[in-house]
Length: 441
Image 1: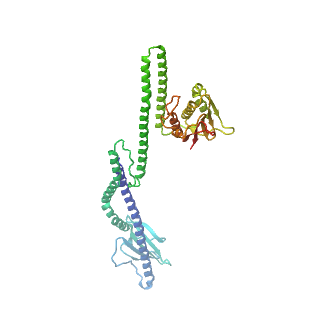
Image 2: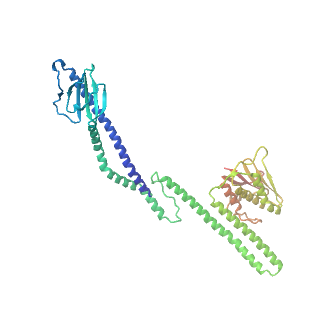
Image 3: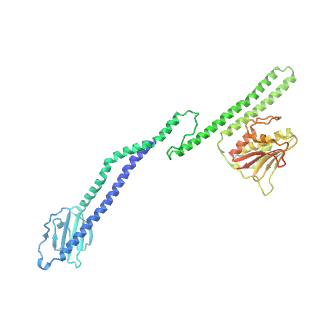
């Protein structure tokens, strides 16, 4: 169901309900006011009759039969007067229906000839007579409903006009939504420009801001994917050409020595290609990851052992000694939470880079402090320009003898970002070597 139909349905349901509620309140208030009005008149009438009776000379003007009022009677009103013996002194035509209730004082609800009446009884101070004035309740109801109808009839007549006006207002108010829908429908798939939200209604602005944020994130993701695809295509072109050339050399080899040498180069090229593809796939998965799927307390001893074990073969080949430095008691490694598998990849990449570019026969140290994790090697420090470029995809300083793809630091930085950590590079305290330091934000 559309938003417009839903709003109209709510209005069509709520408007009559509110109208009925208003009618009930109006009738209740009108009944209260009418009762107060007529009750006051009945009390005033009985007081006037009592005052008149108190001025009569009963010794001279006593009557043996009821004296009926000569004024025009109203069928819905009645008055009667009795003496202390229960004899009728004064009554009108309808007053003959009123019963004598010697103990009654004030208002009494009665049923006379199957019709409800409201009667007010007033006793004389010396109980010499009793005055009663009554009125049909139906007369009051008729007046109440007359007042209510006079108020509600215009509402009933204008209700269809009101509903049409509300339908027009709802449709008019939803014009910005229709305009937004048309704009989005007309956009091309690669048009991720932000939608202007300054002139939009206040209710739509949060939606537009959220959509613009989504467009920005999608645009950034697509830009990363395009850049990644272009870089990957560029980097894969060279090793594939090298492999093709080495394969041709292997096929054209005439002696066993030439064939063995060409096969070795082809095998090394295949290993470099395998490593490059593996790094590309790993970086692609990390780039597509928005947040961590699991976080847990980190077992730094297990992570250090795993990372150093993975880097041991390369360290032995280059005669590099691996060392691990733990914080002194009672201090402990950083109390971080995260994905242990990803952080193991991060440490392995940092150790791999440190071992790969450290001088042969030197030491690479994994140092854990209460607030950071560091991987240090010795040797010549990197220039400031190269330190700033560390982390660029496929970037490798010139003059490197060890094979690599230039993606290890990028992968490590992406894993650090997913954990809310900062990976930075700087020389050692004595100005030598390179330190890769992992700290919390």
